[in-house]
Length: 74
Image (cartoon, rainbow, N blue to C red; front, top):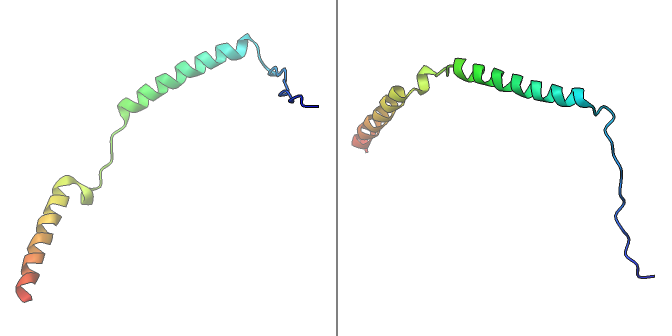
């Protein structure tokens, strides 16, 4: 009457489990690592000229100059 229910147990076996898939996984992992190392070395960041560091510094200085000029009108 007060017995607790046990969880159901399933005996799941993958349909396509054999040595070929394990070997394939290792090869695909090696292939992925090789491709990643190639891509990591070859990529160059495309920077926008508007948001480069010198351009941002010049904009900041121009903003301070503009604020100083507008303070003179008040």
